[in-house]
Amino acid sequence: MNKSLFLLGGTAWINLVNTTYISENQNIDILIEPSSTLQWLEENNLLRESDFQALKNEDKLLNSLTVELRSLRDLSKMILSDLEQQGKLSLNVTEQLKRLTKQVKVSLTIDSESDKLELVYEGLTTREHVLYMIIHSIIQTLDTIPTHRIRNCEHPKCLLYFVDTSKSGKRRWCSMELCGNRQKAADFYARKKKK
Image 1 (cartoon, rainbow, N blue to C red):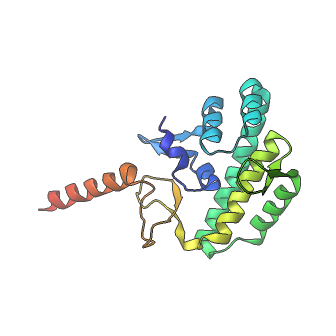
Image 2 (cartoon, one colour; image 1 turned 120 degrees about the horizontal axis):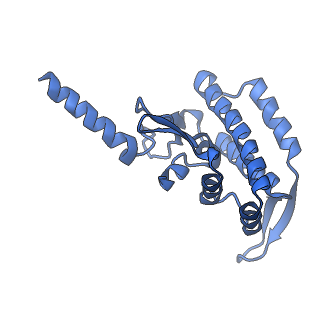
């Protein structure tokens, strides 16, 4: 499995949407296999050390969290759909986000490891921590990134989304290595064939 796919979106919630993709004309779902789900969570820095150990040792907990992640992935897809269609969130999606946020209990701690004191929000349980981190990712992205910079890869056989952080704002591909080069090669051969 290509681990670089885990982070292409640029933010946790878009990376969650990207857990379904197409590879060699087959639909792939990273959240089907518990080991790949755990790897995805770890790669996206969504777990504390204690969370990782708990999920590694308790299949039931990981399976339960995976169900939650699939549900949150569906909500994240709805967010992207709203942004594409109307440039803002619908009332329905906003209400779903509010309901989910009310379910997540967090604690506030002070990080004294760094040179300066810093407030840190953490979920009380593994589930709440992961959900908090993804919800925080959604809110932070929508608050700081113009919606037109959140887009789908232009390759016709790609389902992946990304946050365009390029200076020009004209990024077209989820990844130049995955889709950009593939599309450029296809365009080149199509032009060559016409001649």
